[in-house]
Every structure is written in structure tokens, then in C-alpha cells.
Length: 382
Image (cartoon, rainbow, N blue to C red; front, top):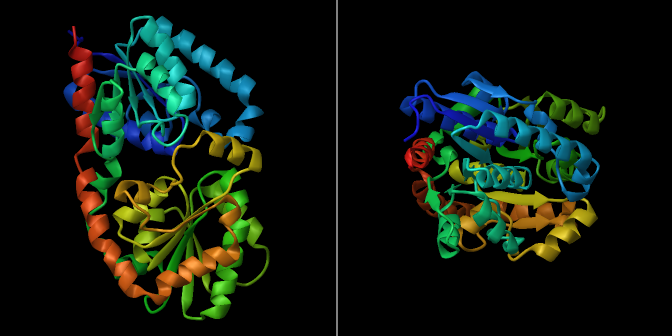
């Protein structure tokens, strides 16, 4: 039986993991008011009482080639963290996403008799499928956010719990676009496109110049359009402002944060592939998904891929319902063509609503509470 004041380790590597981790900590503390939390996390997890072994930002790295330059530091941090956790002997260790960093830690701890869980499945169903054996050796429990992930793990004899997605719990089935435009200080009489070039510096550097070209050309073609860019953080705001130069663009508004509100206020979304595509689905907006990385990173990833789809809306729908323009296909002309297809065919956009509603309903399962129940069962296991 677990103690009434368990020591729980959580390891998050980026902002989305910090959000998930903080929600899980709240739910766990309802079951274990005296629980203590150690590991790695950001400001949200710190607010819930996590003592972070080092700043989470030191783990936020994009792309394969980009990681290479940081490998010595990342390996050193991982060794130090493993030594710390083996010394502390937590009752359970929960890696939150960041599989390349977390799974080796979980494997070491599990081999030493510490229970382990992993929150957010690696995309093993999409690429590097051979990782499943390593995952099986690393975790006592996989906490899956998406239903097709859970079935994949059951098929491969990995203990799994489908908990749903916390975003689906937090986002209402309908959001008032007019009210949100007023809240954000945006015009209510123009067609509005929100543009999200990512939350990491590398992503913005790769995507924003092309996105800005799309904005300028569409604004010239269609004077009724307005664009809003929610900068993910102050560093990205400074980066985007710098890349915009001194040109006056009355059709473009750059705001701080509030990406979900900006998408819900918009008629259409252009965005980087990632968690934001799920948010766009949950606020029920048509979208164009785009992504580009360094060519070496891309070719390595393509050689290991087992699916041609990267966008979560398409994966969840089981078919292509929104366009994806990746790598060489991500040109300004192609992006403009796909955006104009949505703008010129309102019925096509309206047809997405019922599909997105059904997916939202499937994912809305009180994820943090379900994850906490599953971790509690793991803690209580003899």
C-alpha cells in the first residue's frame, strides 16, 4: 500500500507538459493532500508545489539536428536527474511527454524497482514503431490522451489508460467569436484569419517569413481580410516584431498570448503543426496546417515515418479533413491557395462542425482526474 503522503516525481520538458503536469498535480493532491512533488517542471507546476531539480527551459529543444549541439548538456542533465531520483526513491515517477529524454529515465528507475508512468504517448504509431519494446520495458502504465493511441498499446501488451485530453475538458463546445473579438480589440466587421507560427524560436524562424508573405499577399488581394498573430511568449513577440521590419501593416495585429481566444475569434486559422491544431479543432475553426524543419531533420524523420499525416485533426478524424503543407509543399502560393479554398467555400467549413463536435465529445473525459485515478491505482498496487 502507498503511503498517505507519497513522494511523486514528475518530469516535464516544455510548456504543454507544464500545463498537463499542473493539472495532474491538482488532481493527485485531492487524493493525497500530503503528497510531495519533485522532478522537473515549469512555473505552473511550481505553483502546485513542485521542487524542480533544474529549470524546465533547459530541455526545450526543437528538431533532430538542433538537438545534436545540445546532446552533451542533455545527457549530463539526465544523468544528474537519474542519480537524484534514485537517491530520493519516489513512490512513482511520471514522465510527461518528452519521450527521448523521459523514457530512458523511466527505464532506469523501473529497473531499480520504482514504479513508472508516462503521460502523453510518444508518436510511436506514426514513426519509429520499433520503440514499442523500449516503451514496454520503461513504463508500468501509459496514460494516453487519444483513443487510437490506447488501442495501439493494448495491441502491443503495454498497460494503458485512455484518459482523454485536458484541452477538451477546458474548452467549451462553443465559443462566442463576436465577444472574443471585442475582448481582443479586433474588428467585428472583417473576415479574420489567425496566424500561429509556433512557440519555439526555431519554429518561428522557419515559418514566419513565409507566413508573413502569405499575409501581405492575401491582404493585397482581399482588402476585407484582417490578421491576428498571438505571440506565444515575450521572446517570440520580439522575434516576430523584428522579422516584420518597419513596414506599416494596418491589416495585421500582433497580440501577447491568448492564442485560443484569437483562434476562436477568427474565421480561419493558419498554424504550425502541433498541439495548437487540436485547439483549433476544439474551437471548431477550419485551418491550414504547415510545418518546416531543417532538411536533415526532415529526411531522417521521413525515413522513420509510418504515416503521411502529421495533423491531429486528420489523425483523429481518420481521414484528411484539413490541408497539411509540410516542408517543400509549404510555399506561400500553396498556403494562399488552401486558405482561399476555405474562404470561397463557407459550406465546406460548416461541414467540419459536426465532425469536430464528435471528436471533442470523445476527448472530453475529465483527463486530469482520470490520470490521477490511474496513478493512484499504480501507487496502491502491492
